[in-house]
Amino acid sequence: MPTTWTDADPLTFLAKVTPAGRRRDAQTLLDLMREVTGLEPRMFGPSILGFGEYAYQYASGHSGIAPAASFSPRKAATVVYLADGLEAHAAALARLGPHSGGTGCLYIKDLSKVDLAVLTGILRASLKTVTAETFGKHGQGG
Image 1 (cartoon, rainbow, N blue to C red):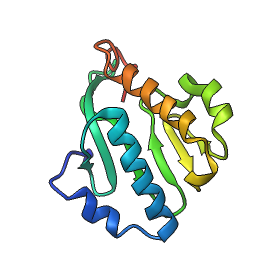
Image 2: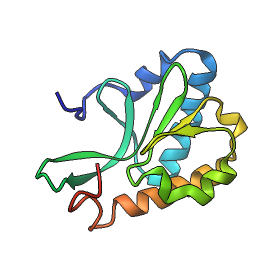
Image 3: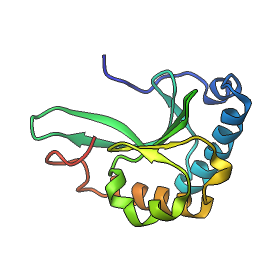
Image 4: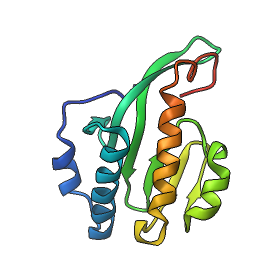
């Protein structure tokens, strides 16, 4: 079943995040993403806070809607989702501080150890890319 927007309250979800350090990081990211996007969060599935959305369509014809900016406070690390991929931000990620990642997932174990100005720049650049009219068409997004 694909992940979709829900009516769950993001603040209620965040209040239950453990451990306390992960909850602190989630609150910081909530504030940062509100600033970057100018939007309030909505829950995307049971554990992702999303801000805005974009449409994508793969070359196979599969299409959908996903958050334009999002994160999830997981037990092992906070995941910041970058729909345009980590490679698009390689230079900035080299200056970010301790993190790991996959194709479109940036894992941060302790937000206090990363450069928030660099992270803000990454989020702004990613948002600009994924909200451009051409992103997500012809198999590029999602």
